[in-house]
Structure formats: structure tokens, C-alpha cells
Amino acid sequence: MSDSSITTIDFSDAPSLEGKDLGHSSWIEITQERVNTFADATDDHQWIHVDPERAKESPFGGPIAHGFLTLSLVIPLWTELLEITGVSTKVNYGLDRVRFTSPVPVGSRVRLGARVTEVSEAKGGGLHIVADGVIEIEGQERPAVVATFITRVYP
Image (tube, rainbow, N blue to C red):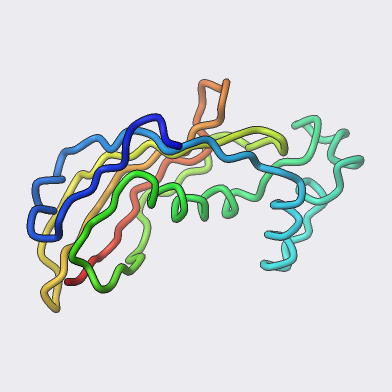
């Protein structure tokens, strides 16, 4: 359950989302199993992620999540914040200004906060939606990821 209720809006009304703060998703735990699964999927088995014993000797004091693992969580967490009805197709269009501002220790929890900054027409009768997102780490002042992400939706 998210801290704020999901925003549900019809495709025809979606342009009114511009400037809207969507609140925050629920918290999701970053487990060692999730990190190991991501390492297997991407062939990125750097010890700082997958070797908890060796990672204790690192500057982080333990294993940390891959930055791209944390970034990939935008997808499931975004779906907790916004639902556009009357849509047949949703496409992840891209990212802008991605920054990994703080490591995510295994065992910590993260959530997404997002604000829609632009809604414009897209080719093919769709909408181009731009949002600024921040993936926060529970109990830490600095976020894990700051990014602008872009999606397109089509009726």
C-alpha cells in the first residue's frame, strides 16, 4: 500500500496531470536474493553486490544494490502512483538526467516519489508523459536515484 492513494485518470483527462505531485509508492526491501537475481540477469557479479563477506571490507560496510537495479524499480513503483484508464498500450520511452546519488545497502527499503512535469501529444494519437522521480532510501537524507523518466500511452 502506498503512502498516498493511486491517481486514476482517464486518457482524455490525462493532460490535467501536468504539474501534479503523485506522492510516494510503498516501500520495497532490497534483499540479497533480489541483488543476486539481478546480477544473474545482467552478468554483473561485482563483489560489492554479490559477496556479503568481502563487501564488509568495502567503504559501504556490506553489499549494495546495483544502481541499475534500483533504477529498474521505477517500473513497479510507478504503477502504484498512476493509472490511466482508456489506454491500450503503455511504453517506457526513456530516461533523462539519471543520477545515482547514494548507494543502497542490502536490507534497506526504497520507495518512489514522482511529479508529472509535462504531458504532450505523441505521434499516433498518444500522450508523452514526463515525470521527475526520486527513489528514496528509508531513514537516509540523500536519495538513491534522481531521474526524469518518460512514458507514452495510447488509447
